[in-house]
Length: 434
Image (cartoon, rainbow, N blue to C red; front, side, top):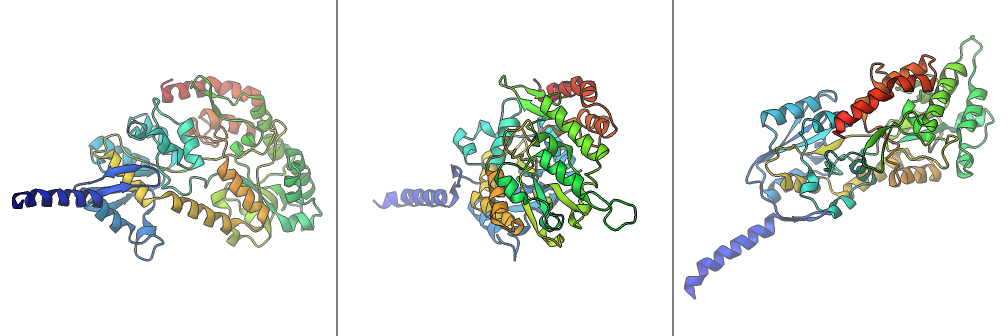
């Protein structure tokens, strides 16, 4: 029997080691995860590990991860928002990214996907893993597979809902101008373009007698928001699995006409993306992304509603917008371990807790609270500008930007869309290898 003791002792060590290293997250059972003392590098455009430092909401979790997974160190490298994609790509091309975890803006998705820089996580994760992700991430996986593979796996960007658009209304201005209650309009399914236009015409004027208009119906309108609110889309995923450029759809052309009418003809929309006119109380309404709603900047009461319905929409459109995502590089030395580490650092519970905190910070009434929850729970993936390689609205040489700048310059929607449709579809086909 004594001769068995060393063997039993070795087995006990192995079992204990397995017990220490085995990890089951809120998404799957990873089994034994052991980095062998390797150093993990997080690449981001800001310090997205700040919550894990001393004094942070999740202090100590980095050290726990190192012990659980036998990681030598977890370090951070940052670059500017418009530079971090290039940094990640350079690390991949040079071979320095084998233990990297990348948090990247959506603008970098196609730049790196087309270079084969992302690891196809659907090769190693079961289908049920993806069912546990946030609605926004599930929609991105549905709309953004690359070469038939899924690349999104994390909820480590708790602001993935940060670009979801809403219509925020200045309740004090509504009351002062004797306007109908916007919350009641919403609840009665009457929150429409026509109502918004009537309000805009009534309130847009010179209020101090100096001859200059200083109050408007609407602040700056991001063109994609009015497109989505009418049931339109910049691109759509077809039943055949191909992505199509769809700005020639009737509902998009109607939205472009309305944008031109509100800005150029009626003059009821004014300002730029910084929303200064809105935050200083000089507009009745603003189409604004979730991240930009900041109660600390408003000296007035407000409510948060969905985008108003255009005539082609049969219900309020819940547009997800776009946001950052976390990826692992294609040359990852330990892809399953990197995903396990991500799951440990960014559990689903934290995602939902952060969302709830951000909603509560913004909500000033029960309806606004319910609206935000509904939009985040039921996003419409078609209503998102995923294919941003088609250009920003102000980039006139690109298909999307060329169309929007043409509209703002007075061009007829059907004409200017016709000028760019072939180019847009060709770029989609090239980027997606379809």
